[in-house]
Image (cartoon, rainbow, N blue to C red; front, top):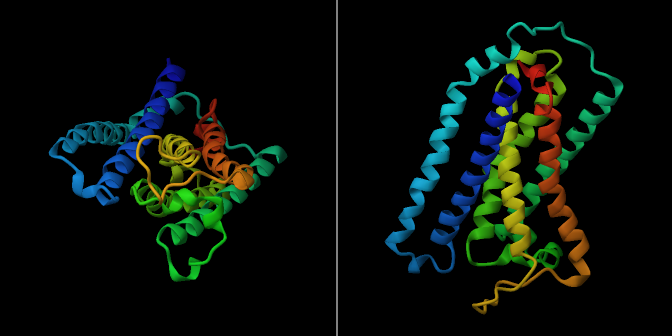
Length: 244
C-alpha cells in the first residue's frame, strides 16, 4: 500500500510539473510573441487548466509531512555510508547539474539577444531560439527563473545530504516536478526546432541545419533525459527515504 501511495504521489507531481510548464509557455508565449495582438478573450479558457495543477501541487505539498511519516513509520533505519558507486553517480549528477546550469545561462543570453552574443555561432546551431512566436523566449526564461535555482539546490543537496538529510525533505517532491517540467519542455522545444512551420511562412522560424543536427539534438536530449535519471536516483525504490 505504501509503495502504491508513493508511486501515485510522485506520478501526480510529475504530471503537475509537465502541465504547469506547458501552460505557462502556451499562454505566456502567445501573449508576448509576434501575434500577441491577435489574442482573443477565449485564451482565458486556459486559466482553469493552469489553476488545477497548481492547486493540486499545493495540496500535495501540504500533505508532505503526513506522507513522510507514513513512509518511515516502523522502517527507520540507521544511516548507512554510501557505497563507492553511489558516490560516483552523485559526482556524475553534480557535473550534469553544473552543465545544465551553465548551458541554461548561455541560452538565456542568446534568447535575450544581449550585445555580447550578437555574433555568436550558437544561432547557427539553434536558429529556433530567434523565433518571434514567443514560445522559445518564455521556455528559456522558465529555465532561467525556475530550473537554474533547482540545479543549484540539487548540487547543494548532493553535497550536503549526508550531513543533514532531514533538512532536504522537500527535495524528492521538487525533483519529480522538475522531471515532469523538463520532459515536457524539451519535447516541445526540440520538436518545434526540427522543422519549419507547415502552415504559415515565418522568416524568423527555421529548422536546425542538417550539419548541426547531431550536436543540437544531442544537447537538448541530454536536458530531457538527465532529469529522468536523476528522478530515479532520488525517488526510485526506497531512495527517497535518504532525505526524510
